[in-house]
Image 1: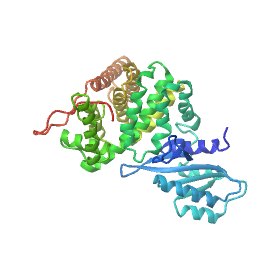
Image 2: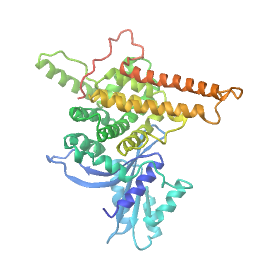
Image 3: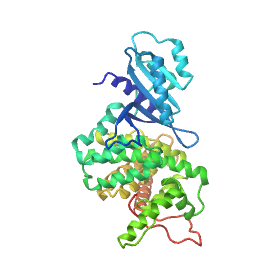
Image 4: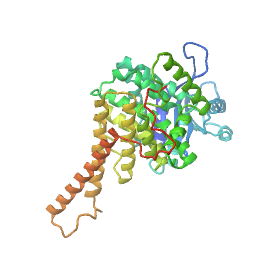
Length: 428
């Protein structure tokens, strides 16, 4: 056990209780390096993503150390340098130090966005920020995240995917790049996915968590660009240029790709993500409530932990307000599994869990003490019959939503001068 494991755990719990997605033990390397093997520069104990009010992710770095021969102010300066590299908004430094820290050191660190705390002080800080109980009842803890990350130890053939999820993805220059590149990595191991293995089910859900980080960033950018694109061609063009880093970059990659296809005497197709029509429809749905997209990563990671540890599926999501988030989660999961070319059963098993969860929430809503649909004049048996009918109707509705995602078509109107939608193809 590492000396700073306890400190990492309290940071993870704190961030998740705040509603921030947290990833522990992030390896840092220079993406533009020249060595064949990535050279590790340092690591981040906990990297958190905070949903910003501007519909963008804000990075918060957490560092945990047992100081020996180094002052807290020096460590804070080190963290500030890392924050600059990752363009992070804030840093939290939790130190195990026998002697009390100098107040001036704390003021110095606060001046450049670093909160400096001793391990003994963190409990009071945690309860003050998360009044009154703090983060002791967090939905996710460090051990659970590490259990998911360790799945690759039992299944080495899926290592390319896990390496991207937990190492390479966090060194990308833009969260948007996660969408395209993660789909490509997932396709490489699609034949290794066992739909019946709970470890693989958990890993696919956690992959959706990382995928939805990039997806949420896309949604925020497109929403601020158009609010809601008026035509399919407008959305199609906007997403292509966004995902490939701009129009010139997209045109350059598309031309190279078409040249290769022509050299093989095959028929060129547009450069898009796999299942492009489904992706555009997914984006269109999320644009209705763009801020909700930033809650998807925690939803998926919570689901992954529940599946891996044989717990009730998303037990904390019980309110009527969670229904739309659960629906969005099901739609994202459906798209990701199809685009990654995972076995159909891998998609269907977890989709059924989402359907049952939504039905359960609707049932609890109807059977709660404040229900209005069952008249007080009705007999108990009449009330039960009405409740059963209500739940069955809602269950059928949720099932219909699931079925629609299997044969989804674009709903945006086509421009008169535009052709049909792009043909889906493998992620480039």
